[in-house]
Length: 287
Image (cartoon, rainbow, N blue to C red):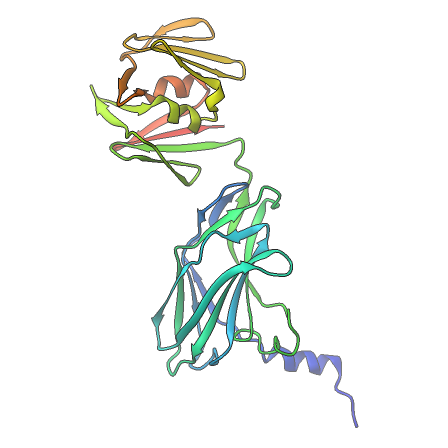
């Protein structure tokens, strides 16, 4: 009996690898050590009807150190394929995965959409491109014979080290501000007075890397100590002291619902940041 050459065997196996098309609006920038970061929606399309067989499954696996924070929303936006159970977890290599069961194959080429995708990135993940790998018996029909066979990879994001960079957005009348792409809840909302957007000093300072231990509220005074920077403010007083040097603000700090409020510019600039205004948003950057 003649033996099949390795080249022919590899060719036969490659013919059993399905190549769906993957749609992605844009790649996403992910930050080291940050939880619940959103990814763009992903669409996986069959090249023809009945590509993904009944009883098979698709896995979407992330690199080591990146996991799905929660199960994404899946829906069929084209065709008539039926999806079964959907689950997330860690595989044997501690990689985050999403598994989708194919309940019934399609009679029309179908597209599956993944939305509301959120991931958590460990601090030890290397910076650079993030590829998601599609595999499973619906994609790689050799997987039943060779478990763990490599699937198809797509570039979906880039990991950057944002530990030394801060981007914060406060919005008027919103109890949520955004720091480096992550929503943070506040117990008081910014507001406009005398043409200025007043924000809560504690949340502003926290967003700029100041810890609660570096903040002191005492006898109508606010004192911030961050590294070599010392800032002193007083309620109903327009004087701000930075490292002992006094300067005048055009408004005074006030107390609202037990929170000290102040236009963001003074503390931001004292801590070395920059500030911009867009409609009712206050955009702060600190390198």
